[in-house]
Length: 284
Ligand SMILES: C[S@@+](CC[C@H](N)C(=O)[O-])C[C@H]1O[C@@H](n2cnc3c(N)ncnc32)[C@H](O)[C@@H]1O
Image 1: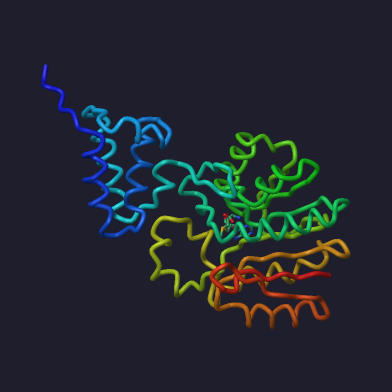
Image 2 (image 1 turned 135 degrees about the vertical axis):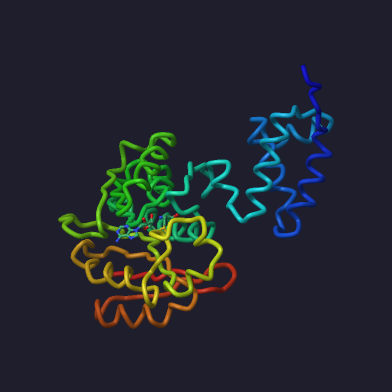
């Protein structure tokens, strides 16, 4: 029988942090997240067990994950989860990794729903992991959500998340192209649709691992959003709200689209904490 080599936990963390530091500002955190995932321990456990000895199998697995991160693979896909607005979402390469920016859309919806306690029908168009639909269903137990995606594989992940987070009774999942042939109307239409211009996309790191279907917004990035704006009005109840995530440089062009496609509605652009335009808000 061969000798089992042991690796000291703290030494592994120091080494791996150095390796990741070349490309990531969060190197130390990432190394710890990987180790916790492999050892199935909470983060605090590492602090109290600096001299734990990893066996060969654990060391190999951990080293393989470091190597994959070094090639650019996103950590959430490796560990299969991502936190969003305080909840843990399962993620696979079939769904976009939910981003902190989108939490602002959640906050805007929460404020609106608190101010309108009798309005409880929401559609999340392009639901992906289910981040928007599920977070809001979790927050408002009387909220009725329709979650739509064109990707069946993404919907499978979203359905699992709804079950894991106990909100599946509040959400109907539909595989569909935007609101085509849906004869229902809503108080809120919320969407984080693909908005990156196709040409820009090929230059971006995200496009190597995250689904193109979740990112590619066509020639000017606004092809899908434009189609949704075309359909939106007849699916929105009077006094309802539309909230769409957009890219920084799109605030002018998207407002022009609204003026053309939905003349007379009240529109505004919401900015994020870094002062970047991030969301289009429409009230009818
Ligand atoms: C940017 S991701 C957003 C995922 C999730 N809502 C979030 O914020 O993390 C966009 C999602 O829209 C879906 N999608 C793209 N085109 C669509 C269409 N025509 N109809 C419905 N969903 C679409 C993609 O499959 C993807 O899941």
